[in-house]
Length: 380
Ligand code: UD1
Ligand code: UDP
Image 1 (cartoon, rainbow, N blue to C red):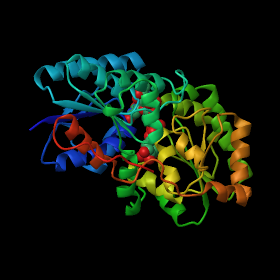
Image 2 (image 1 turned 60 degrees about the vertical axis):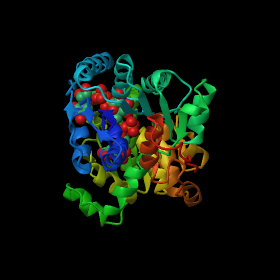
Image 3 (image 1 turned 45 degrees about the horizontal axis):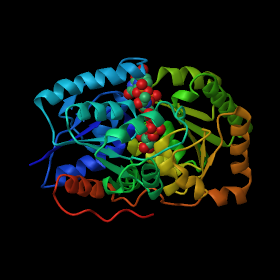
């Protein structure tokens, strides 16, 4: 039986790989061997625990304030040793993290076919998001099978010269993860959040972590949130803050002592998706949240100047606002007070998936390895 090795290391990869791992484990055609790099630790383990994922191999590479080169070299070195004794028939990597690209390179060097999930996203700016735009372009050069979430991402790959025969549009497995989790109404561990859930108060849910926003831009995000909190005493700002110390140092100082700002540790995925469903507005620089919030009909303000996820911008539920303090304040203010504007953005749209991306992924991997026919692609 062919062995397939999903390789992942960060929170968003784990969330998006979880439905694929489940589908592989249910398949009678494959042996699924799970390898995690441990690029994230607490935030990775949190997801694995929720989805019942028990890694077969854990490279445990995390270092506090790790450099990009350290993630790359420690992953390639760990996988190099692993592949010497355990050579799978294919690896699956997800997205644009350094774990993902390092996993692809290590597999490629060992002659192992690389399946790239969430292939073809492009912002068009090599330096933003950094280093993710470069990471995903590098992986595209060496992957054998490119699983594009949407027809837009497929078109990006074709424009770069990738053979359409090697691309399959599957939808994004984040929607599979969301749909199996969000309805469960998982209780909040933090009693403040459970109280908030039944308070009827409007919630501004915020996440921020992008490397290129760290430092001055993220300090400005903190100041903007402090101004919103002061101007809107009836609103509650919920900020599950990323584990990265550089994020905490930048965003938290301006928020100290604000009674209507709740800062929490990263929420377990079940709790986060419940908070997403309760939120009035979402303010984020996250990739995954840009995909999830539109399918719940939440207006999303994205604190970036560009996006590799234009589908929800085109659908009108996502607006790119950058990181300028004044602009963040004004855009939140407008959504809070201009009902027509709010309703024009608060539409549930599903450009990213229908919940069947994992099944398509496993079928496409089968086709790559000579099991089954080419599948019918996802259309939005
Ligand atoms: C990484 C990815 C980014 C992705 C993000 C998702 C790269 C280069 N970056 O960025 O694409 O959007 O994950 O969140 O691949 N830390 C912990 N515990 C954890 C996680 C992080 O302590 O569970 C701390 C460590 O000090 C670590 C730092 O956060 O050094 C940064 O983590 P890292 O994975 O390097 O970068 P992210 O900003 O999380
Ligand atoms: N998420 C979570 N808990 C949180 C914040 C986010 O489970 O406290 C989930 C969110 O639902 C999404 C994913 O984490 O699926 C996004 O991860 P992140 O923003 O760290 O990375 P990105 O998607 O930007 O690469």
